Image (tube, rainbow, N blue to C red; front, side):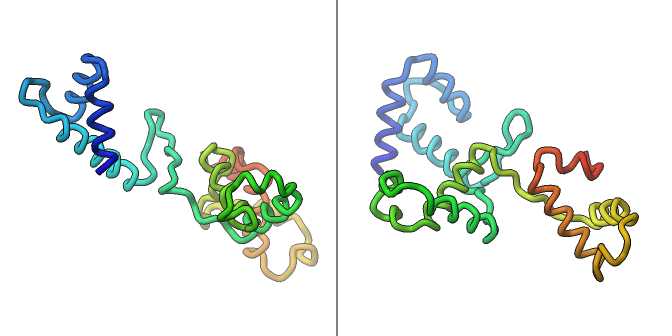
Length: 177
């Protein structure tokens, strides 16, 4: 309820043009019978709905990264960051608060989430048969004794390695863009 009261106060404190803009955006009309609590409630409901929808698209079609759509990180990703966190001095870890300052895994997950929200981590797309076929075609010149027993497994590992080494260029290398 405190959030609703805060919304009412902010709306009342806003300039007239801003109030009119908000009211019109909500599909309401600015008149003497306007219920400000109803405006604040509608804004709160819209906000909840927006974040429940998770991966909303921005004006440019890019996914908006929110706390609701953070991906599940692989154990390999987590372990890699945990190893780096182990090297972080104690006074820096203490800045994360009493709940997690002694938990390297929790700090690593927070760091991964922040990197993801800032767009520095790109999710591995689903590997398709087209991707596997293209990679198999690329490595067919390698002698069989160097490729091993399972060409598909090799292709999968090479695709993952390509993605890990250069995620921004990944799709273009496979002719997917």
